[in-house]
Length: 362
Image 1 (cartoon, rainbow, N blue to C red):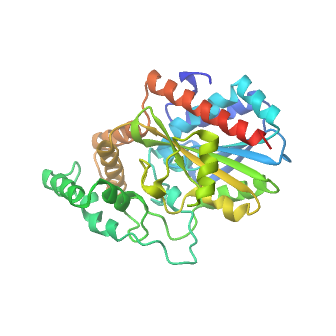
Image 2 (cartoon, rainbow, N blue to C red; image 1 turned 180 degrees about the vertical axis):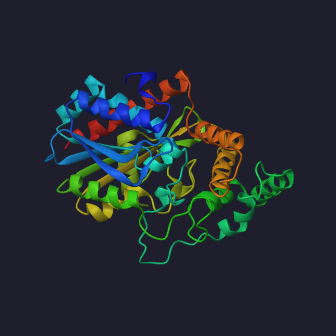
C-alpha cells in the first residue's frame, strides 16, 4: 500500500496528497468547505470524498479518516495508499461494489492538532438524538475539575489526586467516566455537543446520498490512541446486537472486540458517527468497525488530551509551552516512524480486503 511517503507532516500536505492521489485515478473529488474558513497555517479546510466504482452498486464500503482531527495523520495515509494500490482496487472492481473514501471528517481538528472540532465537540460522541435527553455520565462530573487543572503542567497534587481517583474507581470505570461522552461541560473532555455539528450534518448528507438503495454497507473508521503501539484493535461499531457482532466477526475474525461486553480497549461510545447509517440508510445492512491503532500508553494519551484542552482555554500561553503541548498531542496520536507506519498500512490493507471479500459475496 505505497509506503511511508503517503503519510504527511500536517493537514495541508495530507489534503494535497489525497487530492493528488484521487486525480491520478481520474476520480471526481467532492469537497465540502469548512465554515471556519482557514486552518492553523492559513490553508483551506474541507471534508473531501471520492467514490471508487459504480454509484448504482448494491453494496458500499466506506473508509473514513480524521473523525478525531489529529488522528487523521494515520487514516489519511491509509487512504492515500489505498488509492495507489492497483491490486486492491482491482479486487474492489471485481467485487462490483462502491468504495467511498471520506478524508478528514474533522478538518479543523486535523489542522490545529486537536482531537475535537472547533466547538470542542468530540465528533464520535455527537451523533445523538438531540430531541431526547442526553445519556447520563455522572462519573465525569466527579473528575472534571481534576482533569482540567488551572495550571499547566499540572501540579504534583493534581496528578496525585487524579491517580487516586483512578485507583478508587478502577481503570474501566475511570475510563468510561472520562471518555464515553458527556454533555454537561462544554469546556470539558469528550464533550458531545448540544446539537449536530457541521461535520455531523455534512457526513450524514454524504452517507444518505451514497447509501441510497444499498442493500449492504460496510464501514471502517480509522482511529489512533488506544492499545499497544502499532497494534490495530478491531472494535465492533454497530448497535448492541448479537447477530451484527457475529457478522462482523465473520468478516474480520474472532478478534473483533466489543465495548458492550467490556472486551475492548475503548469505553462504550455514546453517539458514534457510524450509527448515522441506521437513520440515513434504514434499508441497508450495516457492518461497521473502528480500526484503532495504538500509539502511547493510556496515561500519556490522557495527559496530551488534558494539555490540548487546557491550551484552548488559555490563549495567553507562551509560544514555547504552546509548541510543547501541540507536539505532545501530535505524538499521542501519530507515531512518525517507518516501523509504525508499516504496521498500520499492512493491517489496514488486510481489513479492507476482508471487507471487500465479504461484500463481494453478494
